[in-house]
Structure formats: structure tokens, C-alpha cells
Length: 117
Image 1 (spheres, rainbow, N blue to C red):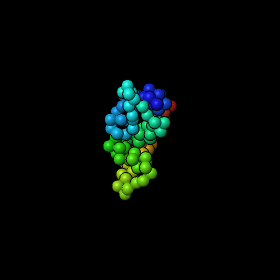
Image 2 (image 1 turned 30 degrees about the horizontal axis):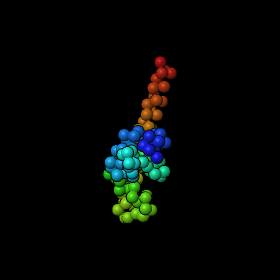
Image 3 (image 1 turned 60 degrees about the horizontal axis):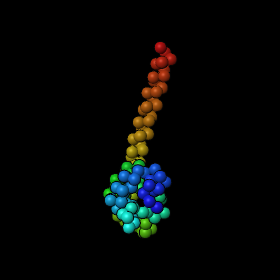
Image 4 (image 1 turned 90 degrees about the vertical axis):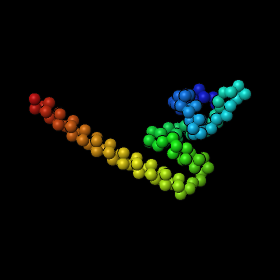
């Protein structure tokens, strides 16, 4: 498939898809006319990349993780990297939960003040 179709199917801009290719995150081939073409599995790969990016995983770590997903094999270093990312995300989630809890308290306080006024 061409870059426009991949962009439409994934909701990722063509510019981002080109960047993924430059970073060796996404495999592409070129037609004789120089157009990028992608395999059907590119949709799933782009979605995986997006999930990792949304989780805050930097591109250099995504580049380390993707080969493991491609081959189905892993190394102790890869497991350690994934565990580090999981620990980091759990800490972020705990911080967000604490922030949300404080915000809830502020909402309750402001509602009480509104009623009392």
C-alpha cells in the first residue's frame, strides 16, 4: 500500500510515517517511480509504534523493542528495557492518580463555597 492509504488507515500523517521510515521503525520499499510502499502488516506496526509513543517510550527505545516483536525472540536486555518502561509508566500513573484525587478535593471545596455563598 502507498503512504496515503497507510496514513488514512492509521490516522498518522504521511510526514510522521516518513519519519518512522527514517528512524528504521517502519519498513518500506520504493517503486520504480520512487514512491513508498508498505506491506499489509504496516498498519499493525504503526499502531504498535503509536501505543509505545503514547506511553512515552522514546523512539530509540521503540527501535530496540520492535525487532523483538518482529522475530518473537527476546533478550534479557529487552526484558529489562520493557520492565523499566512499565515501572516508569506505573509511577506516572500514580502521580496522575494523586493529581486527580487533589483536583476532586478542590472541586468539592469550590462547590461547597458556591452553595454557602
